[in-house]
Image (cartoon, rainbow, N blue to C red):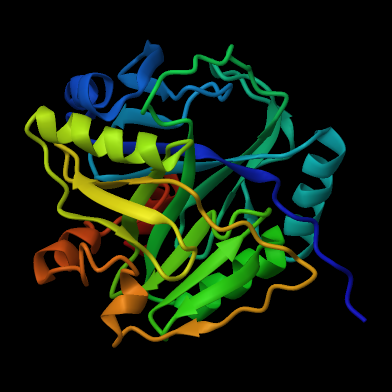
Length: 311
């Protein structure tokens, strides 16, 4: 009987990179509802209303994509156990657990997933005082990733990081959880690795709708939604940021009971299972295209080293 793997604690947020990202800061502050927590050297860290040091980071880079996905661990013991598990299983670990010297601080390590995405695991991070603010995002609910090897990446997240499968959308998408949230990571079958979208959670359904209203009043309408998904049972409204990243407002994500939940396959040919309210219907071809994202070669330094070795 195999041992139960050490599990990732929770999703903290994400750091995005790309040319000119700092110039999009006003959009996130004035419209999306985040606040600037810290900035330096071409990087801006945006907080929500909770205690996380930042939910969404913007940093300058030559290629649009993910700088790192940011996870929390409960303590040093669990952090070191997860690191040891990754090492034992042969993951591309970027050093031993250590103190982080960035503004968020804390202790942890980094690892690359099979698509060369950098994942950062951190405990003892800086905490901010809560700032309750009506209809503003409290946390990052989930990150959805496009991948050319959905089954392989799914198995890696389960085996190396302790994620569990919550549901499938036909054979095109898998929803993975690390805690009671229905999914913190979801994978979409695609031709190349890229970011599909990042979802920000509002505390209540009324705040979800008011956040959409704030965007519309400022001239930014959803590209898909509002509606309510089948898998996860969460309301959704998708927008496209000025830099071309897809971002989502959501709320009321399904909470999983580990003792009773069984993953199911949700068909994609029934519109009422993709949008239970039938207010949005299925995504348009244009929405699907923007959610394919731009090809992301992965962690830039390692990608550069690999290119040099191949030449």
